[in-house]
Length: 274
Image (cartoon, rainbow, N blue to C red):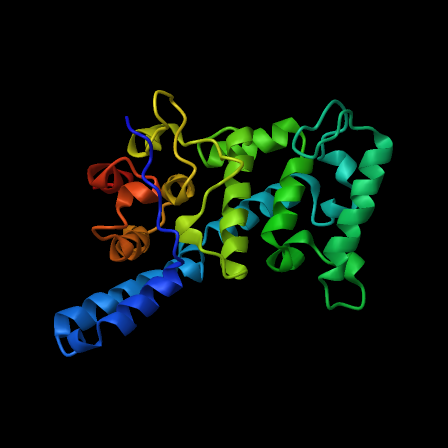
């Protein structure tokens, strides 16, 4: 296995500008116009994060996590986190060496302030977590999950056919992709500093660093995380196919699928189910 090819250093938006400005004489040709529109469409779908909206992964995670808490601990469970959070020992996800009562009280105060701040009601303290859940950001949702007891984390992770450690790393990765889109970052050329756990069944589709089992840290890594989660919640294939076509629209002789982190064209097809 060779070193991963370098991705284009130019931003994707610049790529479209170059295509449209350097070859104006070809725009009369319908095939060239179609290709350019496909590139622009692919860029917009990935750069804007619309593919995440269409897959509805964040909505599903929000629903599963908040519903789990409400069903087990009641609609006002966010006002009493002692009943469902980790109460002792180290919490590596929140970087606590040892969770104690003082830490829990601080976390509860912060969570109540965050949750009630979202409400437009005169008496937000009477509102159910489910009523407020639609306003909870992905970052806040991840924090709630990290607060949970080991048993609660495990029960939710099992829905997505993974461990709690995997699910946390995957949610963090989705949040990174979402933030990159929100701040007009160049998502397709991203290099992930803190790698999420690679979904085991997808690792064979990813580029590996030379002479190691370490998989790529490029866009494809987060992509297969998204594909795994989409599969567990039965997302329609046409939705994942839309992401597939957007990526294909951006690949060419100079910018290959390998530069995005896939091991090959065959690996790319395999990741998307052929």
